[in-house]
Structures are given as structure tokens and as C-alpha cells.
Image (cartoon, rainbow, N blue to C red):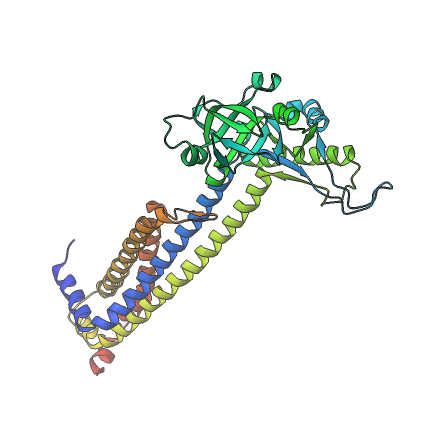
Length: 414
């Protein structure tokens, strides 16, 4: 039942102690504010990590050669490892059932790229058709390389969106235009987009063309694969680790590399890396919860202390109420009412300010591994409800003390 006299008493008490009430409320509001901001930042880290891994297929595994750092089977350290077509073909045969998409890649170096009289400074890479799915390359015009381009060593090229913008901005579509690569005309058949703009500064051509036309021989610069989807994250990680180990073992044997020579070649798994980052994010979130809750506890303790002071100041009043027949639960309710009111108003104030700040600033935050810090309103609201419950418990001790005040002693209080 709504008791107007009770509310008048609460507001009278607040008016008499404006500064004290304000500082108490500020400590509670700042606790909620800090907790929500920290949770938002934790979610922003998770969003950023997910965004980073979405740029390539989440199950991708990559391998690239390096330089040996150890003597092995009579071979001196310092050998530069070179992957070849045979390595790619052998892996395709040995692990056919474990692979979803596969592509080798060669970087075409020491070539001149021109469009008409304009010289272009962009990288040229030879890839297979599956590379589109491994790199998560989205086509915005035309098509990607296909199998027919590979077997015919087609003189076709796919350019990035940034190249289209920089070079072909006055052309409605660059499809059908020709670029010159070291004197050889390549027809543009597609335009792709990437999440990173720097990756749109690439020109893709069929790998067979890159090897045959530009003296690539049978050399390749790296190997890339994606694995079939599985039921859950743990299975995906286990699958990726198993394939990665098998791939590394084969490449070490094929190139006579010591099993513990980490410099000779690198094999990288997106799932393994994702597991590491997600584990780190979870630990950071736990830490943020701990810091935020400690801040809130400090605010709640402040509420409890203030209510103890209120009880001390109103001891004589409480004694008079009891002398007039007020029940203990009526006294407890009077103190709890004020404690809950201060806690609730402060908590919702902190919630509104923190959610508003995240809403305004969050979408504009785009840094490495942090993207759009935000927090679920349900989570934030539930946190405030827990805070109100904590405020109730914080006010109960002073309220219980007030209810136990002896009438004679309270009336003697000055």
C-alpha cells in the first residue's frame, strides 16, 4: 500500500542531509557506471576478436616456409625452405577427407603493373579458385577465378575494391578492362572486397598463369586450407590441431627439417588462435566483474554506514514511535524504505548514464581487437536489481538495530 506519510518522511530526511545523500548516491551510481562500462569494454574486445577472425575462414590453416635454425641429418642450419607444387598435391591426396577448401599461393614479384599510361603499385598474387572461400573474399562485381581459368592458364585478373576506387573511379565498372602485367594484358573479370582495406590492394591471377608466365616454376609461397564444419567449438579446435600437426609433420619430413625446428616453417591455425583469444577475453571479463562488484560493494557499504548514522540521529524519534505503539516491523520498514529508495535511484542513474555513453561512443570505437563496446540491457538491468537487493540487505542491519532500540533509553537520548 502506498503510504504518503512514509514518502514525506524520506524526502524530508533527504532534504535535511542533501550533501550526505548525494555523496552516498554518487558512490552507488559510480559503482554501477564503472561495472557497465567495464562489461561493455569486455564485450567490445570479444566483438573485435570475432571481427578479426571473420576476415578469414574460422577453420583456416596456413603454412609458410622459413629458414632452418638447426642441423638435421647432416644438413646445415640456415637453409631456406621452399614449398613446391608436389607438397600441395601430396597434402591434397593424403588428407582429402579432412579438407574443405584448399589453395596454394605465389607472390608474383619484380613485375610492372600498368593501366593505360598509369603505373600501378599493387601486389600480384597467384591463387587457386578455392582461395575465395579461404580468405572469405566477397565479390561485388563479376566473378572469382574458376577451374577453367586454372587449366587454361587464363590471362584474367581480379582486383580489390580499393584498386577499383583509386584507378577506375571514372569507369562505371572495370569488368572487361585490361591491365598490363610486365607487358602481358590481363582481362579484369571481378572485383572483390575485404574487411581490411589494405587487403583490397591485391590483384589475383590464376596460380598456373603466375607460375608459367612469370617464371614461377613449381614454387609456391604458402599453403592454405579450411576444414569441414563440425558440431561445436571444442571439436573444431581438436580437428584444427590434429590437421595442423599432420600438415607440419609431413612438411618437416618432405623438407628434412628437425621436428623441433620452429624457424624452418610456420603452421598457423585460426581455431587455435581463436581459442587462445577467447580464453583471454573470458578471463578479462571475470576480472572486470570482480572490479565492478568490488566498486558496488563499496557503495553499498556506504549506504549501510549512512543508514546507521540515520538511525543514530533518529533514536529519540524511534523511541517515541515505539512508545506510541509502533511495531518493530514498522520501524524496520521505515529504515529499509529509505535505503532501497537511495540505492534504486542511484543505481538506475548510473545505469542510464553508462548505457547512454556506450550507445553514443560505442559504435565509433574501432581499434585493434576492440569493436563497438556494448552491454546487454537485460544484463545491466539485472545488475541494478541485484544492487537494490544488496541495498536492502545493507539497510536491514541498521533497521534491525533501530527496531531493538529500548524506549526508555531512546527517550533519554539527546
